[in-house]
Amino acid sequence: MSQNLGLTRLAYSRVWHHVSASAPHPTLSTIKSPPEAITPPSLGRLASRIAVLLMGKHKPIWDPSTDCGDYVVVTDCAALYTTGKKMWRKQYYRHNTRPGSLQQISMDALKDKFGGAEVLRKAVSGMLPKNRLREKRLARLKAFEGEAHPYKKNLIHFGGKVVGAPGWEAAVRAVREGDKDRL
Image (tube, rainbow, N blue to C red; front, side, top):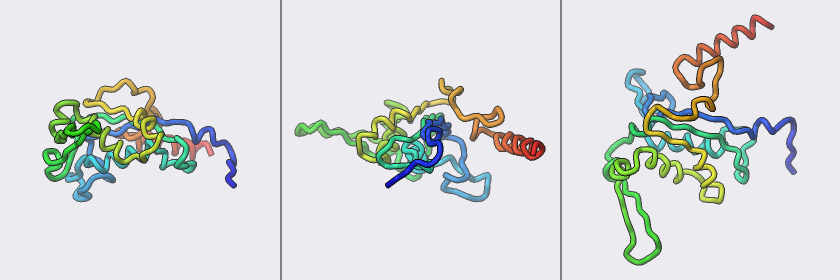
């Protein structure tokens, strides 16, 4: 028997997260040191992090049968980073169940034709559970080729700075110091 203790409505609210596909990320990078050698997250690491956010697995109320995930805005998809020769060797297949209709396209051709956002969407789609919630979760993924996107007002702000943007930790420290002074 499960019980909901406290106010869970706030936990089910959807939050907007911003992820840059081209910015170096110290946690998701394959190279950890020295600090100047940190690379942008590779396609797989980026897609797995986005899939966790879309499913809501980062929340304490996560349940596989409920859709409690958040929105994710990904920018700079034109600069997706892949390791090795995946960009030229990875193949995507389609088949419409009729004999002789198997079609394949390489990752670089798919990126040239539809952009890096479609490559990222296919990677995230492969990491989501194959159930009826998959399309709803993928609809909350907003991927853009450049820096510009129409969801700037929806992103999480803390102390006037967007969470994850350069300098947002200083805004957090300033707010916490102000709270200490009040107490």
